[in-house]
Image 1: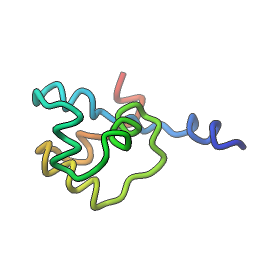
Image 2 (image 1 turned 135 degrees about the vertical axis):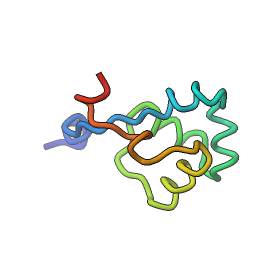
Image 3 (image 1 turned 90 degrees about the horizontal axis):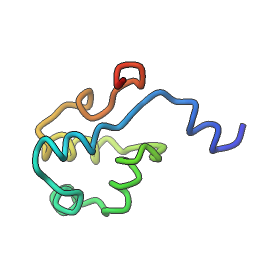
Length: 79
């Protein structure tokens, strides 16, 4: 199985775009507050991420005032 096939096999969807919109926040603002590059957040937002560190997840949840379950959902729940 190629890495591209593996990326398509998971059912986890990142809702970062929706959470940013709900909070009236830009990706740049979030990146500055969390201490992560805009590029890395963009990868996550566009569902191209392959992993996330717990400390990054914690910071995202604190800044966005959400839980990991608000940020990530199973694809069948996202529809």
